[in-house]
Image 1 (cartoon, helix red, strand yellow):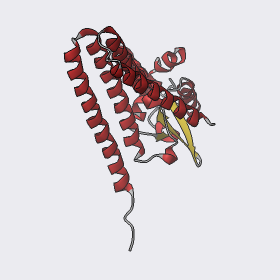
Image 2 (tube, one colour):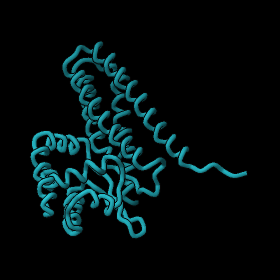
Image 3 (cartoon, rainbow over the protein chains, first blue to last red):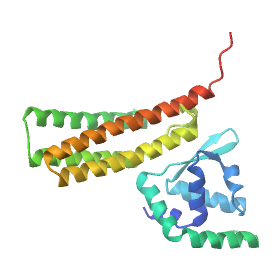
Image 4 (spheres, helix red, strand yellow):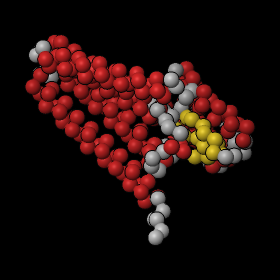
Length: 102
Length: 135
């Protein structure tokens, strides 16, 4: 459960999970939504995979990510968003404006 | 026996046990606290299985319908099971037997309608995605 809390504590990772709610996406397609370097994104994906919140599946040379969250984990994410996301997202936007990685 | 077979066998045994206990309770005409306890347990089973439902993924290549719809169907069904299980459990803990029976029948009927609708919606996307046959 610690891994799940760690994964949900970061706004970038929560945003990845939000994007995956719409359906499975390629790693590159997901990374395009964030102003961070590819190694940073890979690290975020690794944390989410370790926590069991996403599943990666290879399709040729592309890695497809999809949501693997239980109802409880999704509810936890909802709480995390409701009680902290807005402020952290603003910070993330500010950092993106400065061209820094989160 | 691979992982999927083991999981399937475990699920069949668990479902068989639930049915067997339900038949035994009906046959013995059990009423009162034992019946309530069993039905509360069923509500908890519904919640637990609903909670893990969105995590049981199939490989993308073996999906029977469009992947984003399949994911949404799995998530919404999971939420429905959890909330229905919660309502079921509270109903059998708090309300009188006759009222609880009516409410749980409504929950079961609603569940059947919701799940059938989602599966139909999901399969419809697959049919539209399938190109028309020539000739």
